[in-house]
Image (tube, rainbow, N blue to C red; front, side, top):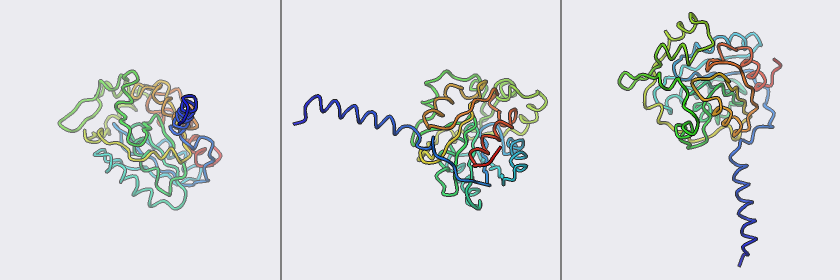
Length: 258
């Protein structure tokens, strides 16, 4: 019969192993060189939100493609990204902003994906209830600005300008508000079946002034996945207000010199 002391030692060892397994395995992994980048947008936006980053990636000689996320259900959103990934020739960096971190986490297991980049994005574990996780941190102000027309949700203009795009010139933020795409309620109920960050080199850009996703939640997710992490003094839209910083992180993930 096993002694109490031996049992306790085994129990502690198992707990330690479990703790290690909750972190990503890719923190120290070196990404392969990639010339393709696929970018996915989140809620309250469309594919054009990546324009500033795309121009810089193209100037660096990379092939960049922005996915038009249908914002309907998570499976349909993942499928839209997978179709674009399947068209890439060779290693590809998959980048997600905001809600599309869910898509990156799921679609990132695609064999063409060489590295993952999260920009102020959700980064759930496989099967995790992201809403429950988010509730363990203070609720960000933008949440109060979501309005629904039946099954379609969007951000009010006041919340968009103040809490979503707070560090952009008002005129530019209003243009972005004008092309805001509504999301379906069903999208928010989806859960990822896979966590690509467990096996792929991962990078995370935390927005320190974020009022849409709590910055401490972003830090928690980045640390949990063992991601190479940078902090950007920006609103939720760092990809627009700080495109140089975001582009440099993507180039690093692609094994390219910034």
